[in-house]
Length: 151
Image 1 (tube, rainbow, N blue to C red):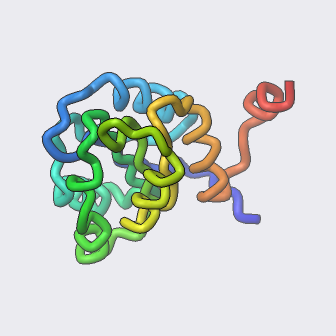
Image 2 (cartoon, one colour; image 1 turned 180 degrees about the horizontal axis):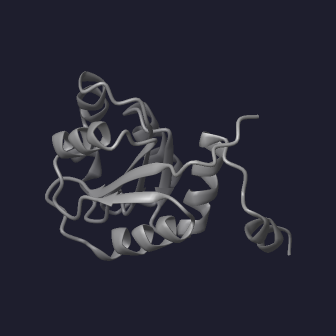
Image 3 (cartoon, one colour; image 1 turned 90 degrees about the vertical axis):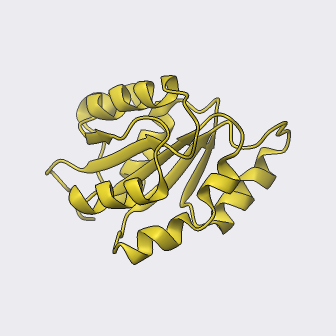
């Protein structure tokens, strides 16, 4: 198992014309506290802006937030844009991803088909996303976190 001690960079933003800033603010604080370098692109971020930032900062992960229910339209073609830019990063999406959504498994399948590595609903605790990213990047949790997890 490879253990990375250097800081890992994540690019974070709200895609499309969504202007909900609360979710990414919480995520930025949580990921920063967990030792990640967070590049917060803010709200109403285009697919191209995500790709440019991921390239510029050599990001290990791109975290997309969407709370207004139109994420599927906003994310169509997203992985093509990342690929064209040469981005090789884990992609996560979370939030309120579909209007009137009652079957999250269906929503998860939709976004996995669009190319996302992990899909989270709006109830997901940031710690869960952090733990998932550490697992995907093969980063060992710190002693403090291990103690918290096992208690």
